[in-house]
Image 1 (cartoon, helix red, strand yellow):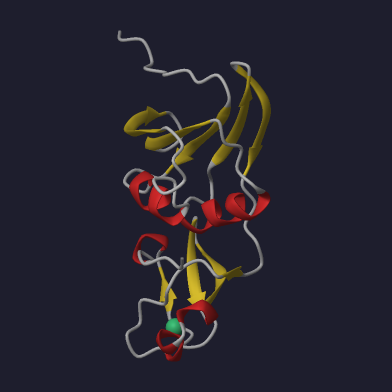
Image 2 (cartoon, rainbow, N blue to C red):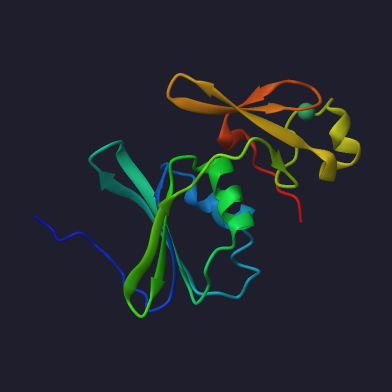
Length: 152
Ligand SMILES: [Zn+2]
């Protein structure tokens, strides 16, 4: 058996239990490339619970509560680990806010918010085990992966 591949960081944030394929979108949503932090991404790690998961490690940056809320848009079951001096200082699950504001554009080309994407708002709705996002204006439902254009 191969050892679990863990790349350690001294200080920063580890976002774990991201749905497979969503780490790239999350890096874009959180604007981690622009942040100049060292970011390492892993995809398709084995996960007992869900078969697979992605992981993001961000060096020398602790996510703010607003950024943690944004993580929930794409990875509602993600776990955040705050690392200080190689140790897990804090570990918690993301919480789904009542509304997502100022995060993503509405994918519906006819939605009125396309005139001013900063007004786009999404209400999380449970659909079985999954989360769907309902646009506050056009009322269409989207899967998290469909929200792929983010607001600056
Ligand atoms: Zn809409």
